[in-house]
Length: 273
Image (cartoon, rainbow, N blue to C red):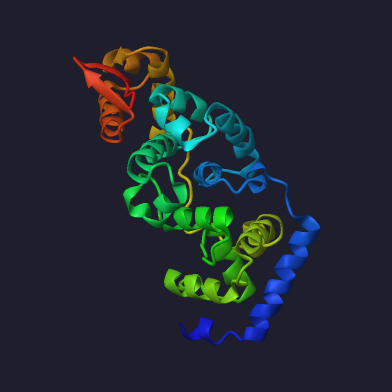
């Protein structure tokens, strides 16, 4: 980490000051910032993956009203979870959140923070999400580097696109004001979302969402809506979606592997648990 290691402590301190100053003037009021409940923060982190904040807010509020605790979500039906998630995109995230709730209740006695410390055992949770929950719920002196923070570090310290992730995580650790992790990461999120944007910096995400129109993701969404109404065969689903039977069967096979649907005698339905 030659380039990152060469960054002075004075430069890092100036960076901290400008981020905090901007956030104090322009910080956003968001519902998940009004709680330190690790379950609610986990819900927000999963919903915010590849989704704009403005879109997430109403889904988050409805979700918490329906399932205010991890135990309540674990007891919910798969169909009700999918209905609540429809329109948010990437429905497998909702399924994984439902599965995660079950694992947290069964293996960790409902202790979300402990589950995040052992996140490899929790479906759909990776290092970024696990550490984000620990940061925002418990103010632990940890860092997490998502697309926004990666862009901020690259822009502020003039780092190349090829800078390895491990170097960016190491730099993020150096930038962390100890004892202020929650405040710091909220400030960073505001700084990246409102000031150091992809448009202003020209720094694009490393991964981009594929086109939705005409995609398998669009067909999957249609299939889920139909199956939430009633079970159906692949032939019926192909007719109702004006899609080839071969494509429908391929997509349904993938959805079965992911635990979204189950087939019984050629008739598909939503898997309940």
